[in-house]
Structure formats: C-alpha cells, structure tokens
Length: 301
Image (cartoon, rainbow, N blue to C red; front, side, top):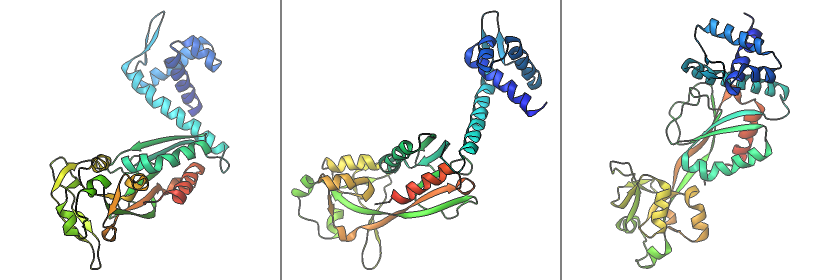
C-alpha cells in the first residue's frame, strides 16, 4: 500500500473517532460516508484489530482503537509541524519546542523569559517540564534544558554553554539578627540557629565558607531541616534562623530588605548553570531563537 493510502486511512480513523460517526468524518474530509467506512475497514484489516464498536447509532473506540488513536494524533501532529517548519524554514520559528527546567529556578528565573518568547513567537508551542530529577535530553527528546550542576561526561549529540555559577550567601531576617550579637566569624554563625537544606532522612548539606585558603565545609546543627529551598526562604523570613542560599533564590527578598546578607566576605561560588540542547536541532529556527534569548538574558546570580 502506498504511504498516501496509509495516511488517508489514519486521517479517516482519527476524524471518525473525534466526531463519533463516519458521516461527520466524511464531511470534515470532503469524502462520502462509504469512502470513510471502507478506509477504516481496510485499516482494521491491515492492523488485524477492530478499532471501533459499531452500532446503528454510535461509533465507540475499542481498547485497541483508543491506544492507536493516541499514536495517530501524535503522528499527524508531527507531520503538520514538519510541514509548517518546511514552509517557514529560515523565516519564522514554528512548531512544538520541548524544554526541561529545574523546579525553583525554572519558575523564578526561566519562566519570565519563556513568556517573553511566547509573546514574540506565537507560532511556537512551548512544552516545559519542571523537575529536579536528572533528565536524559537525548533519550526523552528534550530540545533545550537548563541544568544547575555539571556532569562528568556529556553524551554525544548534546551541546552546552556555561552561563555562570550560583553565588551562595548567608542570610537572615533583620528582626532575627536584631536580638543577637552581630556575628563576625564563621564560628559565630555556626552557633546561631541554622535553617538547613536536607533529605527526608534528616541528612543535611554542610555550610560552605569561603576564605583565603579555600573553601571550608562545616556541619551545622539545624533548628529546622527542609527539603525545599523556597521553604527555607519562608522560614528565614519568619525569623527561625540563618540559611545559606543561592542569590537567584533571595534576590527579591534582599532588595526589599526582608532578608539581609550575613558575613558577605565568606560567600562562595555554588553550582554551575548550564544551557543544554540537542545539536541536531540547534539550526531549527525555534531552537536557535530560544537559545539566543536564554543565553543573552539568563544568569545564575
């Protein structure tokens, strides 16, 4: 069977499934009821499975039909996108663009840029996942990703650009510090109550202090251990204690005076921020446009 005939069968099937009748599908595709019915029947014969439960009044998908419909919708969507890309090649970004972003950084720093991108390129359909788990961009077909933290080995087919690194600062609420002697050394800071980042088993990340001789790691007894950096901010603002946080997390609170930096001379560099993409898609207008925007405006501070 010629590819065009296969495609006609899929189009007839999808239209029938969505509209609930061969007659309505025929009107959409400008074909007769009989032509639609025969096209679907040939498709079922080729697949060796019934796609519809048929009655005189209704047309309902079988379990096999439901699964096949999802695949067909995706295939037709990909074909439509490919056609649009070819039509607008080198002129206007179009089609679906899949991203993966860290949860907090993605929401706070990347999302405003995605909204700007969406306004600038309305023909692009953005699909962004927000997760702190490791996502294999090659395996999962992610066009562009933002990574906090590096990798020992980057897979083939992946391009990357370092955008800087986090700066980790100690911060607390002005009210909390007002009732305490001003800390002057790391020892003073460790004696204060720490709002620590930690896992569900209670294990915490140590504080890191910068200095002339390098970075020193200090275990701290936390007054509160939280598995969310955003929850840490709320606890610190409420006067629970001191936390070491990335500047991109607390920029607004520091500028508003809700938090103040403590011992700024002991701040350290944190994890690197990296822009990642599939190299076989970087020449696509939509991917190139997003990479230009993120590389130009996204920073780790």
